Length: 232
Image (cartoon, rainbow, N blue to C red; front, side, top):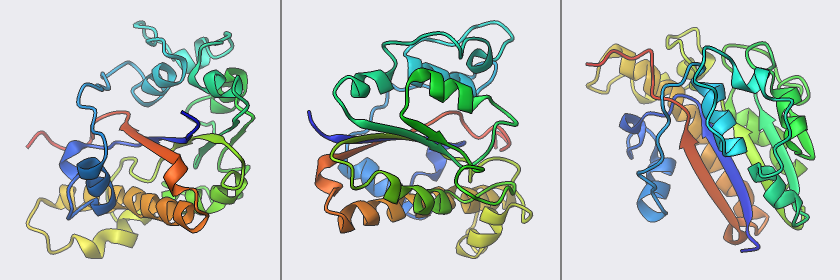
């Protein structure tokens, strides 16, 4: 009660990466916080946006071959999670480090009732494949951290496929995993997902510096398993 909430959807977060060697910050939060094993992200038709739709509205996405965020984003959702906070006068905001070329998030989040939704263009970030989650945190944390009470939603993108050295997040973190005794594709994936862990520690440090860490709850979930990795 009366806590701030930061809800984070992590792109392609797979349990194999949540360990001290790959994601030390998230692994520590998992070990010392609350770990809900009964949250499942089904492989819906639109994976990312369908899980996002379900989390935001509390309603399962359409089982048809459709994009629920696009086709039903104009509906009213009075019981959407953001409106639970709007009704108690929280500042509400949603941030994403990509644009609407894949999913129509601007319309969807505005219609849900967030005070603001900002994407890569609003934040003045360079469009690459894929932008840094660290930069996302750095660009946004000052926009809410001094509010009396806040609910903030993040949609990350750093760990999006494909995984090779053309991905700037892979290139940035590859030195941490190049000598690890795992497959090459895992080295690349670990390098990409590490960028989110770097973003997470950045967020925690900013909350600590601003003395907001003790009154803020951070909830993290993955929207799909890593579909580009082989089953082996």
